Image (cartoon, rainbow, N blue to C red; front, side, top):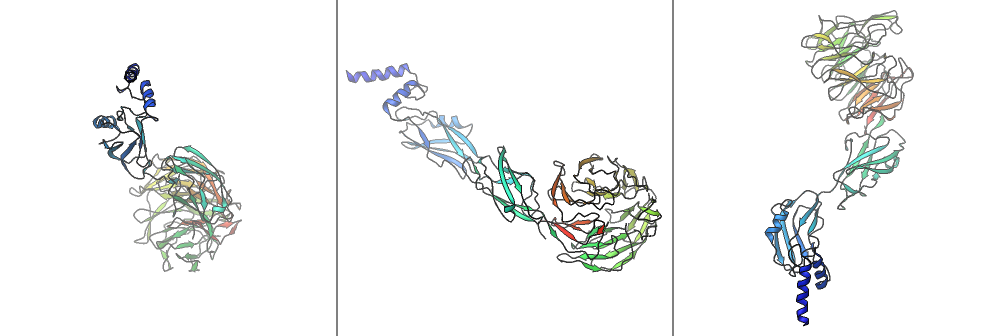
Length: 586
């Protein structure tokens, strides 16, 4: 009698509780749960017997089950998984093990292997028939948003750094700092911006403006598979380094660089030339008895070694000069070349794409003393210098308006862009014009948002023109940009300080550094604070530390490695002899 009761009970329970897979041991049915508990102490399951975390491509999984397996339906299992796994196959290799092969998985993530239909010898199906496969073949890395890596310049924000990660991280801890500047940086907090961007707030307490480095190690940061970040970052900080003194103080002058990398300082209220040879630690005074020019001369490098000097004035005389000279920066010889057709002082000079040079406008003469004039007479003429013949030829076509205290720059298309200036009454202009060397004609350009005179301009890497440092500008401190694609001049931003006679230099990260400059015309109160224009990004100005001196009417050049070099100028109305490098080191 007892032997008969059990089969009847089994049939009765199996009929009362229908199974998903048609057998009474299906553990997704109530009957299956009852029978599984009756015959076994644990549910039927299969676990991944492979590495749970893969450090290479995944192409197979070995499953270890806690029961002997019935004969599997390999074709059914393959079809169930073909949407996710390519060329997948299932094979029973031992009584309780199952080998699954497929095309390699190389993308990080979590995949689900569908095991519905895997049955034990006792007829049980799996409690959980979706097995997760974690693939993490990639080691995370961290980079610094908007910054340039080691060997180039990087710039620090006054508030935070933004780091990006190559994949989402489970934990991003404060970096460990080392390097020469580590004692001067205090990390405050970490904020998660999104899955792969983290913001680290910090404070700095630099004791000097000298350059240095900071290394950040991310050993406290791990991805979702506990892989540690593999890289570190070394941030190079720009700083100021004293350079050699000039022999003569110079103001309102241009410094030049030849093909050898030598720096030439010439004229600027001193009728002499001196050269800092590349790799040298001091300037060499050459030809101390150059032709006397008080101020207002203009020069341009003709080639890799020859410098053309034109015009200027011999104070206290009221008339500008017509004379021009060639200074050989290698042999330091100084020889006359052809004279201009008319006297010019405070004119523009631009080297054209064909190697010839155009001189534009300028002042012909003053009424009474050129240092404190009652009036002066500006020119609307231009002439071309041909280095092959050493002669100047005046253009038949005149400029659109007389201009002195203006600025000119060569555009990428070969035209010359002439900006602002004044026509002799100390009233700044809001007009611009173009010179076309093909037709040798002048035409009006876009209007300036603000009238400017005694300004500076610089062509940027993108071909646009930055307009800044205006001296006769109605006490305006706006920085403007000529957008060549729209043929329009826009106000980019206002610098925090007025910067008449400042020097602007384009930085490797696309920003523009402003160094020195006065608060107002002929001022003895220039700004010591350096500023950076975050050009084409936020277009805001940011403080970049303090210069050693408040200097104005100085000059500057940029070395091939990106280091900036500032020299001369005035401090409190006195000529300045010192120089400074601004870079990683020198």
